[in-house]
Image (cartoon, rainbow, N blue to C red; front, side):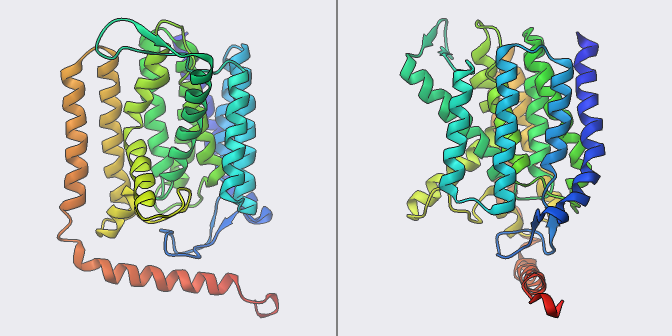
Length: 366
């Protein structure tokens, strides 16, 4: 079993690594290009955004070959295909937010029909479980799948951030699942981590390709659904608690974004530059440094998830305190970089304007 798990990871990694150059060549031919048309984007040149193909191919093929085909795994693979198609359509056609949201809900309902469900929650501070009724089980499951799917999508704002954070989360959940004897979950998460890490060398700053919504929605969806699998007595540890701990950074960032938009009376699905990675960039940190800083926070939260699964409460609380302290330091200790902010913004703006002008010229003028 141990060897099979690592083979699952390696096959996914190699396939993703080999497929990414293919995605780079295919992207311009199908129009999957990200042109920096507004101030939100951190890049200043047109970039292919079809890297989700590599992540999707690597992880899906590996899971299909090495994991047992029970009803729920088949359901998750079907859902993964559907969510990936939805993301690719958004990359190519820029779907309205409502259409994309309804598509996610529909796919989440299909998962519920495949018995991918959160049926109960454990008592965090004692013995016993609280089982959900049918209606509450349905609502909690749908909210969980759609919420985590969009959480990963929202943090995809810097080169390598979503891929690296998803890989860290997948590896941590895989380890927790393994030590609890949940080998199906462990193998699935290792396949997902392999796909993300195989893509990362081409996506880390300076990126040669973006994963696009196809990749980010797929990663979030697979994290949300695969973490629900497991034996009944320990399912909630992996289904709810561990992913919340591991994905604490993007979940906090998403929750704060929703609150910020509600306070400002803006649509919840509207994009802005208030995310944590945008704030780090506005303080003068470069993309590479900002991404590595957020990797560190995600890694510490992942370790906190492992200590929690072993019942080490003091260590878990201490690690979370360190994580929030790091975020506070990152956001306040940028005095040396602040004088460069205006100059950096001006350079980005001018470069973006040149790219937009190039891509909007009449065909006869090119």
